[in-house]
Length: 164
Image 1 (cartoon, helix red, strand yellow):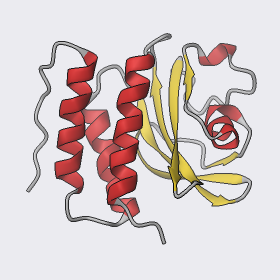
Image 2 (cartoon, helix red, strand yellow):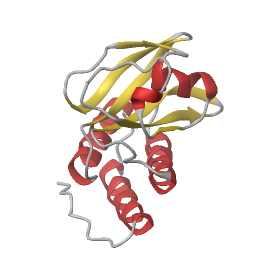
Image 3 (cartoon, helix red, strand yellow):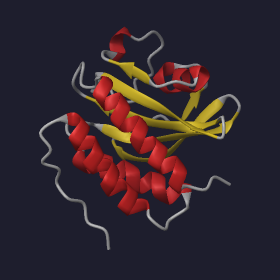
Image 4 (spheres, helix red, strand yellow):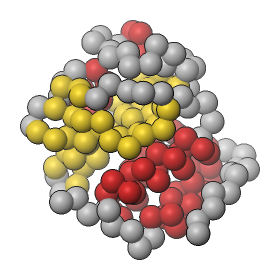
């Protein structure tokens, strides 16, 4: 049985290293991408401060993301590629760090309380499979260290998961 451990790290790089170690242990010997997504969302929501949503959207066609496992309030079910922060991350194939979602053109407000967002595209073998999406009720919550940390978590998830 896996049990999360509170992280007492004094700086963000150390925090994300410990979180990555916990994630690797959590996903060890499990290959199902849905089960792994559910556990990653729960781990992040439990241990990362100041989040109001953590979860996944998966690319189900060339032009649409569909809601996957998450923690937080109910969410938008479908997002068009190129729309909002998640759809833009897929279209551009790059992480999107948005300090103020209200200033992002075309932002999709699934939860009106969200003020900042970080979206990491899930790219495996050159193909975008979906996104890891983090929302915070605090403007400017995410920075470059969070971006690097969540990109590392996404890489662990991708390496551990089989997508069929």
